[in-house]
Length: 206
Image (cartoon, rainbow, N blue to C red):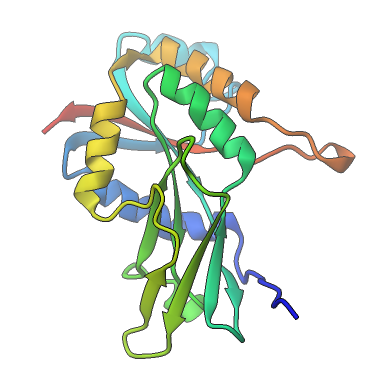
């Protein structure tokens, strides 16, 4: 019988590990790295537009993922939703690269600042499921089974972002966020909506 995979954290919990790690990676190339979770009534409102309309930024979008564990077969699974890929396809047209990340942790104790994370670029080649085998050793060893669009190094992440992005003024970025949302939105039963990406505003390349 096929083993059921379950998770022990939410995406919001994963964010607290992933955002600092991705920020550190981005700061290797950019002087200014600002993570935002934009709302049109806050970051996209008239006051925000007035305050920031003179600024230009590069931008990258990011979806946090949570590890799903199969305890019996010593495997993890990471799911990439179709709506992420739909949004990423539209984002690429306006020079906003999109990626996903997931901490490779099997319990809360392993969910610390040093936890190894997997980073995946979101393109038309990205898989919906990524399987990771792990070996119970100290430290734990992980083996990614599917490698399509998985970043091998931090430099690969930076190259993907630099090659896929360009500076846009703040007003255009707000419009871009709305466009991406329109192409990646799914309304589920009882009216609950889909996941929204976190964005990083980037400026002053080193």
